[in-house]
Length: 245
Image (cartoon, rainbow, N blue to C red):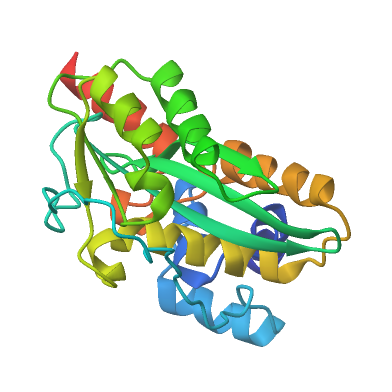
């Protein structure tokens, strides 16, 4: 009964977004000697599970004739230091007032979203705003590589000049190949499943509020990532910094 109570607490504390693997990890952190299979069984008895997945489709506006960059990232999603490889992308959120566009930039080292921007129009200024936020938060190296798809916003002269100004190497996915930016696509899939598909937004402001909370509070600081050994991006960065110092 005590374990079921703790499972239910963790489940609701994390907005019903955790399945048995992450709830198991949280219980281990809190000192419970329990196996993952037992957590699965108890959750099944309680009739609770992580929010259901839905079909997710990646979209890119690449119908243009502008020059594109080579794929320098080449699906190397595990850099050995922070601020070595960043990835960028855009997704759409429907509201009662129309579309809301979200541009994000992730540091592949820790999977942390370091820059993001929301606009009601899909323009080059949207992706530049996300880049500016990233640059304010990070001290970048001369060999920083920023990967994106071939969308018209990313090939725009203004965006490319922005990269050149800061000495950032531009990398782009192959035509129509979402796997070249798989980690960012995975983030958007998670965002849609855990937040967007669970809500119906009447206004863009409502969606903006929830997206801010999801990225800055839950995803970056609280959500346990299996690829990081079940640490949050913030925890992982702190842990790696301690090891280096």
